[in-house]
Length: 148
Image (cartoon, rainbow, N blue to C red):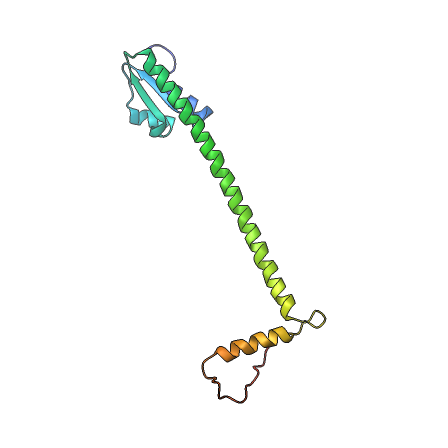
């Protein structure tokens, strides 16, 4: 092996610069197994090997494919981040709409000066009470339940 840092250390340093980069290791002989290299250089699915001797076209094709994969991975990450932000925004809007709906219902069913239930609230409560079991069309009177 030539003097200087080995392939495993080189891979580790490159991965430190860009955790998402796809590494292609060209080797004729290795002191380290792919598993050992992946332990220090990141996920095994982002490390590729080409054995010597190789064809130039093989290197060009691999480099082109891995560069394209890197770009697609970056776009996918950006899309996921954008979707996560949109989900947060939609959840906030949903909570705001629910609060507005609750306020609108309260305003529609309560007097604006006294905050006492109004005629609409009375009719709604009466309709709900009439739907309960125990009341029939022959019932001649109804009691209004005391409210808090």
